Image (cartoon, rainbow, N blue to C red):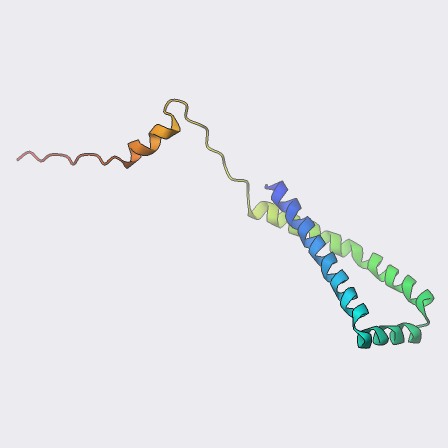
Length: 113
């Protein structure tokens, strides 16, 4: 398994989700129409004292599912892209002599009739 790639992918995916949420919050706070809509919804629900515990409880209720899907993503990425196999180094023939030897064409076999 390619653990470094898998963990990096999972961390970037989680970071991307957090950035998207922060971006939506920023857009909602900048736009006056959206801000008024959110505040109206909060006031209708009983104010921030009633809304904050509900939001936290819903986030905590969905946290195990999010973590399970993230672990699944890490495992799939780790198994899907294995580490590249490194070939052992050949010490008998230096690397700078290998390329020219491969590029020199071999003479054609002569025909004897």
